[in-house]
Length: 198
Image (cartoon, rainbow, N blue to C red; front, top):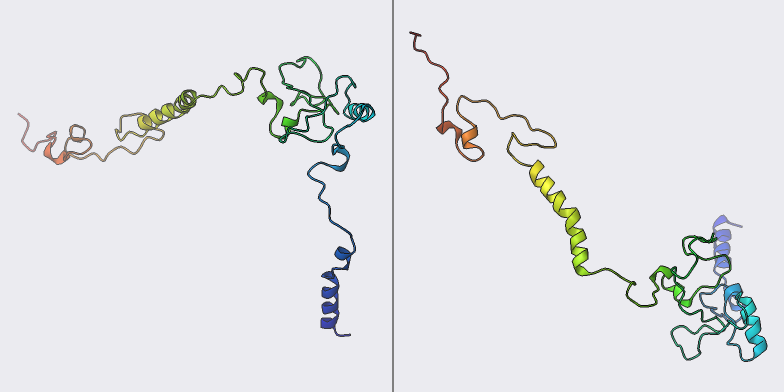
């Protein structure tokens, strides 16, 4: 068999669709991993107890998220209330020190959107950012940088610079009184004479 024919047959085999056609209906299970996916909403006490044990809660503390909550409802996932970093023991040795939680501890549903340090009981300490403070922090950094730039990039040869430029060429006229835009030739320096000394 010619090599080109063999390559052609292999190419046909690569794009064959029998495996796709025989796999059955495609089901998208959502973004939950299979083992972590919530079960259906518990309808009786046995299902509630099983769901509480699944999430590591006591049955009397377990309360599923309300079915009418269209933004947060997730089957039998528990409604843990508002959990912040402030109401956790700061001296506990958490297995996840960044998020102050232990291995297997359930997290609030809002953890899909943000961390617990963004939660607040009163809503006052969620964000302490104001436009005035933002502009102040902006100015604290940039204004000194701009002033240093202006001070250290002066054209005056006697000023302090990052790198002192070469001194101006010494002509036989006065350079400094006409600096920077005047004509130095208008002020000649007479520091020599051809007249005989008396």
